[in-house]
Length: 468
Image (cartoon, rainbow, N blue to C red; front, side, top):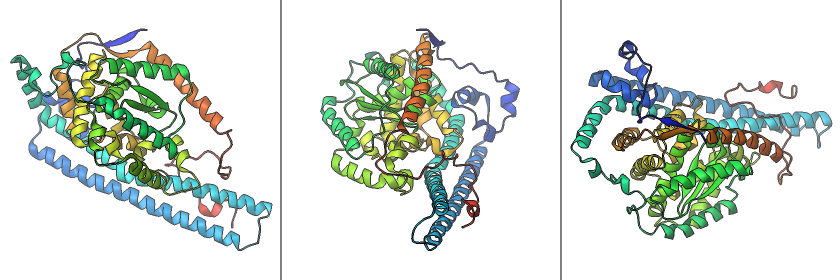
């Protein structure tokens, strides 16, 4: 295996001083986080400029949410008209002739397509748009606060007090005590997995053994350099949803959608390390003290079809969980995953430490986080940010932790094994997904063409299958 190393965790940017100086604050918040770490000490903006930017972003967010809301209403109007056409068709005769059947199928397919688009629009407005603007606000905070924070970190290190911070004993990872009784969470995790399968919330597992073995090996390597006291149990789910999550007791689930989205081994290592940090600190178990697994999954099963498919029985919850960008992460109770502001901050810190300890550049999680938040098309990243909320203080605290970590010239960014894994993964997902379409289904659905992207204009309703 050939590993591509990061040199001393330094950021080298081909940005001239003139280019940076000429950039406005609104332009800078579109730059990657790692660039801003270098840029922030070289620029100077007044407090009024930051306030003006935040006000402008708030206006833009409101305008964008209103745009999506109008699109939702337009889709509702189109769907109502299509269903009205079905009623008219049903009055023409007691049963369909071939021409009527063809027209009916065309209307059915268009309804299913528009209902999926409608569901995506709601997720876009409720989850995607806020993420995009929260990300820019976080970058503004980084520009404003990083120079002073960096000076504080440098002074703390120079005074020999770096280990005084919470979890600052990074050389003791694996020996120190982060939480007690991790083994008690195994039963809780097993029950959660059992319930996911019972309520048909679990997408199919990837069958490509070499690809799964690579992910499992990477997770086990990171777990061996963490504070976990229970074995990690990895499942790769074949789902377009870009997400990963860990259940109490060391049950780690990673979707092929996320695996395909990662561009370097350090990005994948960073995501895995973050999830295992939740296990080490027992975040899920701490939030579940007053909840019962049966109640959680009964509620989850009831709302899954509404959130994922917009309440469309024809598409099916299982289909949406497998093939949609919005999947299981959107319907799971977040207390099961240990998601709240305090625990996410701790998982960010511990995750950076575990990736570093395992020999990976801990900035990988930041680059992936940034890429997801900057993704064009809000729906793709909505599920990831529901289970990894984009709080504006997360990046600042995470880059601060990375700055505290002992410098190393031997941190891996990428590897040949990762590149080979990605190739196997792409081929396997394509092959296994094609095989799915040939399997018999419990519920007969109209034979429709592959759905067009959500952004594509709808076919004029009057033109579906000829005039009705």
